[in-house]
Image (cartoon, rainbow, N blue to C red; front, side):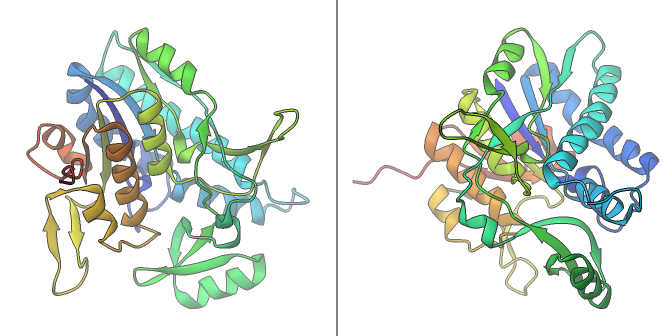
Length: 307
């Protein structure tokens, strides 16, 4: 079975953890343990989030007195693909001796006129106390939004239209290679309508939506979205909270999940199922094997035929 796995950014850096290299390496070891069993039996493509990492790099870039201007988000996104891709590839090499593994920097085409550029929703970086966040927003021209008990920076998140390297990923898979790609949703680029020349843009593409598009392009059998909760919950964080163990795309869309957290995951799962007829699932990283075998998480299957 061909499985596209979308790892949440918190798989590498949990909420509240220090962004030290040793902390992220320890978390990568946990990721590898969760995925190795799947990789023994299936073709695997791994995509991953980069919210904590790109937020850290953006903060450091903005504060660097040696720079006349901070690095743009597309360049920082490319850096996070290299960083996280290398950590994953090295650890997977150790866990799966003899397996061909490649980490590929990929670019995601977006529309220059996407309305998301006027409505930032994608969280990057750490959670700040309200007073600190408001001060940083004023000082650096950031947009911020509530996330849990504090505020985080939000940036534009245009919809992915095409993964430029999808054909290369397909060729690598067909050669027996486990591929790590689409990190942080891919480096966002626009294309000149006449020449086709690509240009980086100031945005972060949602990695779950990119994973769904990639899974469709690769004719994957299963889309697996891994996060820090065991399944989708209706009424999350309220007294009416309850687990959703099975859902159709229509039921997920009626859930009203927030843009900054479960919303894109639900939409990604719904799109893949609608467009391919194959299953998708959302659940906890440590239960990856059990989710694929129907023993954990939220399983998403097609809407029943009308009439």
